[in-house]
Image (cartoon, rainbow, N blue to C red):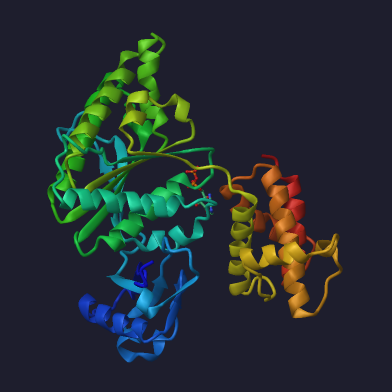
Length: 432
Ligand code: ADP
């Protein structure tokens, strides 16, 4: 067996302050030097200590060491191939509506079929890390993009190897599909900033494409894609198109064929498919789509998707992490009394050695026992939420309801274990 050391690509994302005017390549060099001054780095982790380097503290806001396909929790300097990405997000308000109007003052002039936002955007910061899945969905999507870039760069003959640049995420509502598309768009704009100086996310409002002037819809799709084509004309600009609830656009064809839908639906789907086929030859575009009802989508659309990914309701383990991150946030903002909440791996170790009833043990002041007690309580709660088939969306609002219940009792800063008790009661009450 070869003794050669395996090396893993490690992506380091460096966010600059809004008003920082430092040159990106200067900051990149300082970060590179700072990172390799460490013997080992946690994967993933938030880098600390750069605040003592004056050139960095003047301009940098946050340094994130991203997750990697490597299964180790930390890597030594020698095991890493560093990729440092420096970015300065646009402000949250840089959204603009996108009209499909004909420009000749016609009656459909005001049809707002899409919104565009500049990427990376401050509004989507932290979204990627906040999404928790049991499998490796997030890395799988990043690897797919990487593969398409490699093939495009190698000028692979499209007649022999071809792909459509279309991804479809489907699954129950509230499982983070739309958020994952936005988070991926943000991630790509950061990771691809060395190739594209601009990135934009264009979100299509599927419903508004069905014009009030019914027979116009096919033309609206056409016009919308003309505008998308204008955006991708700029070759140093990467465009991610998000078509949310795509079934509302594409279900129509089956209905039209069965004679239950007006032929307008057919025109919309045909226009969409034709336009998608044209986009597949463009290197700087990615189409992301979501659906709650995969069976309702036109099979010709599903067939065009390179990845059809099912996004399921969270598992007990993912629920633990979602609840833990909720609690950590309210603790860090001083709303709930401070205590360290163990990460999932630690909680599972407590579970292995726990005795029956440990999670119901009376509350203790011993910090270690307290952590164990909390971890077991949250694991038990996670199992309860799982059995009730709660979505990520329902879970993230659970702490609000728990806190409201607690405050209703006339109290002030609650402790995490009382919040956990309230979460459990809240979860039991929730009607899903
Ligand atoms: P969908 O498009 O599947 O209906 P959304 O993207 O609208 O779901 O999800 C709404 C919110 O629910 C997200 O912004 C996030 O706060 C939360 N959420 C959903 N799924 C997850 C998850 N797997 N991990 C963490 N948060 C989640």
